[in-house]
Image (cartoon, rainbow, N blue to C red; front, side, top):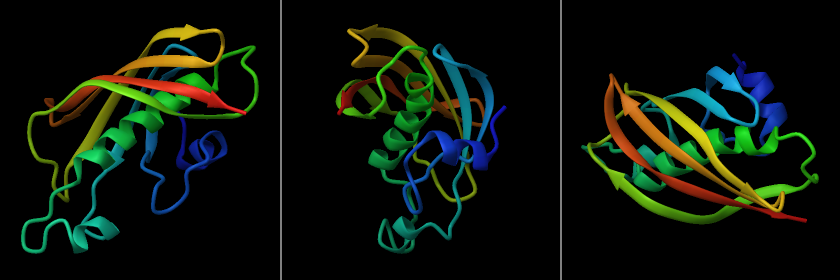
Length: 142
């Protein structure tokens, strides 16, 4: 498990873009399972949407990418640098995410090429029901 403080030491994201609250399962370089608590106090709910707050799909994908980043950034023998999005394949949204939900995000490393390009399979669920899934690609920026 990783606490929020440990996550902040591993990922460069900060408020309001730090979207991983706790890691509940972690196999460095292979797999990570993390929680994102969705609260009404988050800034996106002021405008998305008044009277019917829904977590934007791009933020669900970003939360999944941050969990994937925990896997890729902890790979041994990788050059130091910043991993950023390189692609998104097959992402599907299956149901809305609303304040009060807790996202359980699971990411598994699919491939790592030339120590610069990574691909993960990511899935987000709420109460055991899949809300989003797809493949996320990362590239190392020097």
